[in-house]
Length: 636
Image (cartoon, helix red, strand yellow):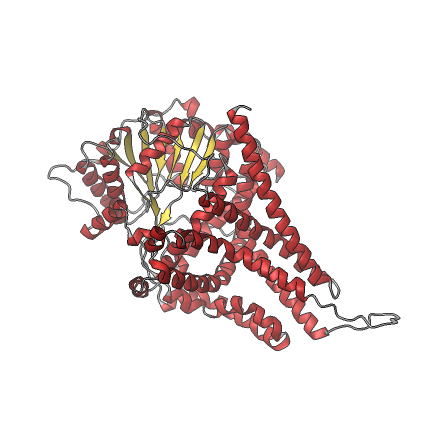
């Protein structure tokens, strides 16, 4: 069998196994739930609960088996079918490092860029890279600071990589439009572009490695790293950093295992083949008005689907390392970012029928939509379950049904089914976390990097408690996000908060008091009418009850530093800080950007290179997808 065919057969077997395992788990859980619901009469209310449970548990089963496969991959030392290339492979093509920014903290952007540039300069391969800072900043003061900072950084690296700065006057298309404008103007000069976010930091070795992989695999359109969250100090961010670092690699390895060359793109910390992007990644304009129509808000999933439809592969490389980003510092900023993602993912639902997409690309778009739909599904499931429990508590057991009954209808005990279903659900929720923990605990070096056995166990306990309380808060947030989108209330494009911002009690009260009030109104009648069911709801109700103090206190940087001193929520990026993050910290402590040498200030025009755009016939990026837009409109 030819090598390509053999690879395709192995990938098909992987996906088939994943599908069978996920489906079998969902069917088993649904069967047990149906036994419980039907034991004493399946009402319309009970049937609704069963349907909602099936939908919710299916998503849980997919996540569970993704983690199991990822755990196996990591236990055996990696996926043998992943991309590999000799580390000393010479580079022959040029790569543009592209960083779009929008009203950002200039000192943070400059410090992160300096850390990245320093690493790239030290690889000895800087001549193969140019760096473009693409500003969409609308604030004039920030724009002036950007020009000063970029001039200083450019002067610091006269031998390369060369840094260019361009500020657009019209922010057409937001970030996606900014990238498209770069490709039109300068794309012809480069084989690849490595896209960074404003808070990204990447090691020089990783950047070179990505370029080597692109050259070694010419059928690759996008190669995505797994960015590691770092540098935040609030309790909220520290907990998320710890959880992502401990549990995330298992999930990422599982996803990469069954996705193969049909992986996804997350919008940054990835390298893209420019010619393929130019030919295939023109974003369609959705029919109708925003938020579900108009320009696509979340471009990354769509670009991955489009470049894959052009015959190029999209890879996720979880083990590459040297790729970093930063988390929002508090619940509110996290929810604001989630609100943008929610609207963007809801738009993706209209692209599922887009002609020419690969089946795996449709699956990724569908999973993006359902990742948010699960929140209202969970809420409705809880509401209907509550109504069913209260109805059964009020009516009580019915021994004689309407009509003649020779014998009473005794209640059927379903203790075994309930216990087994509970065990399966708990396993699906917590075993993926346990797998990540096992990989660390049985590796002495990794165990020390996370703060030792005591620190890890204490952190896991507190993280589990925190995530349990946070889950119902995010459930209500995401439900409101979806409802807002469906009624036509869109989100504005604003700069993200990228510092350790603490919340005031006033802001916490305004943002969360409605959730607490909802929880109280939910809890009181259940406690009075169905007290047994009330205790099942306690984790959900407790999260809503403490929403205000949980949000405010978890944003306090002093508490975060206290947790750090106590050895809790430590990550390898803190205990063995990579050189790139140390450079970032030094630059921030110094004041963001290096002083420009005397007489080195340049006018903005000299920070922009001469245009080297591809021929316009090659770069009409939206033209190929107009028929697709018409198809979407025709499908409604």
